[in-house]
Length: 99
Image (cartoon, rainbow, N blue to C red; front, side, top):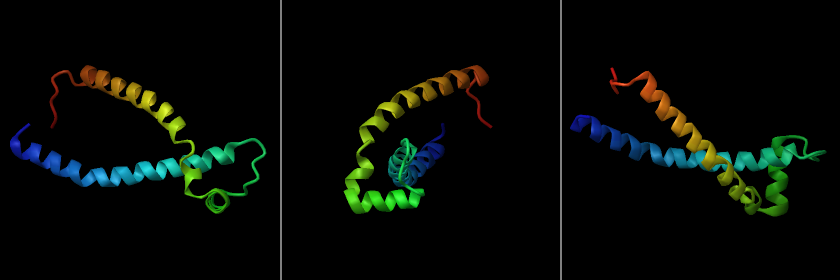
């Protein structure tokens, strides 16, 4: 990697990191609502109704209640994803050339 490409990479990463953090936070909130709606005989009529009820009745903490479960599910999934990506990358592009 040339020096200019390396500098561009770090600049891109610095600009992208805050956006990715917000996406991750949004994913946590959406997952909490999804889990509530998937419960058997859920009383919620829509995801919006579920979100409003959670906020009104239990507060912001209700959205983060399943955070530990999500971490336990996401870390192994991301590890497998990354290992498969690296192995496929070595197989499909053994010379590590990019055009």
